Structures are given as structure tokens and as C-alpha cells.
Image (cartoon, rainbow, N blue to C red):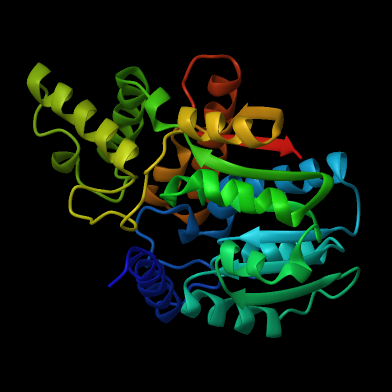
Length: 320
């Protein structure tokens, strides 16, 4: 199996498993799904705190830098939840992904859309950006290109960015949200150990305390911090395989350098530090889960904004 086929297969398997478990990849129709034992997708409130914030940031960048009702390409669109929101805001969107089953599910979700006021247009296609560029009619056709959590999966990021440049109109932008795990330290990991440990000790975390720290010793505490840091940097639990064959091929610093070699950077902005691997693990009655999630979301945002915690992800927006 070629690398790109293996990458596509990894995402196909993941979306099919999620859909079979009841996952609805639509930010407005998302439902509580216990399949996600620790993911922000487990509850619509958690999803809004994390993914909803990403969506609002993308819409703001597009509105401020290219305007309303624009032509947007969503590269690596997956099941299409960002594409769908962009179209609901009146933009004309093409979502592409190399994983055909994710595109099938995106099309199904689109067919069920009832939010049609101000809807622009939306098309999905199983394609890579290079294949899209091969059709010369697409050259200089897009006002904005979204790479949401995509660039760190690529082996040939420079070539992909060059393709994006050809597809953009003059003055068009690229934007996205990517990991910067290299910035996340043991101090940041220790904050997560504290939060998960306290939640677990009060019966409000999905695991028992023994799975966070074995005993209250210095060695056990250090091991817990090491494990949390590895979990966040590798984007997986100890028992999980990597998300895909090329996950984390590039770190945040490398991604920024590549973008700046092809585009004029408008802004990079720190995103969250820890919430995306904490929110879904909270266990209580739903009202209390939501209260804890809101508090942790606010705490994360405040600490990152004030330099008290390091971000694990960042936003970027750059202009052709």
C-alpha cells in the first residue's frame, strides 16, 4: 500500500467506526456519543468549547481578510463539519479529502442539512490538492484555503503549499490550526496530572486513580507527568496506535517556517493547551460536566493568553 493510500485508509477506518457508533459530524446537529471516552466529541458542549472555537476563528479570519460569500477550498476536509459551517455562512465551498469514505459521510450529512438560510454552496470531492491543481480550470479560483489539522500529516508540505498558492487568487489567504507540541513542557503536563488526579479522586474522571498515578510517591508522580507529556506530544494514549502513518511529520516551528517561505504571514495565534484531551474524560451528571468543562475551558484560555501555560496548538493566517 502506498503512503497516501495508508493515510487515507487510517482516516476511512476512523470515520466509519465513529459513524457506526452514532457520531454525527455536524457542529449544529452533534449529539452526545459515549463512544468517545475522552474526546471533546463526546458531548456537544465539549465540542463547542474546542471545535466551535476553531470554527469561529476561521470565520473571523475569512471575514476580516477576504470578505463575505467567497470561494473557499477546505483541504483534508474529513467528514466536512468546517466546510458545512463555511457554506452556512454564505461561502461557496469545495471540500476535498483523499479518504473516500469520509467524503461519502460528508455528502450524507450535507444531504440532511436543514440550515438553508444564507447557505452559499458546498461540493465534496475525493481528491488531493495536487489532483485538483492538475485541472487548470481551478488555478486562481479560490479566495481562501483552509488547512485544519492537515499540514502536520504531510510529507511534502512545501509542494502542497506551492499548489495552494497556484489555486489562490492574488491577495487570497491560507489559514488553519496546527499542533506545536514542541512547545509543551513538563510544567504543562503537571497541570494536566493535577486536574485529572483531582477529578479522579472525586469520581469525576473516566479512569480510576491507579491509572493516573500508582501511589503518592515522587517516582510515581514523575512517571505520571512523563506519561501525560508523551500522550499529548504523540497525540495518543499508550494503548493506541498513531492517528495515521504521517501524523506529526512536521512540528509547529517547521510548519510556520514553510508557510513563511511561500506566503506573507498575517498572524500566528496561540490556541489551547490541554482541554482537547481532558474535556471528554469528565464524568458526572451532565449539568456538572458542563460546568467543569466551562471552567477548564476558561482556565486554559486564560493561562495561555497570559503566558502561564504553553499552547499545544496554534492558528495561522497568511496571504498570497
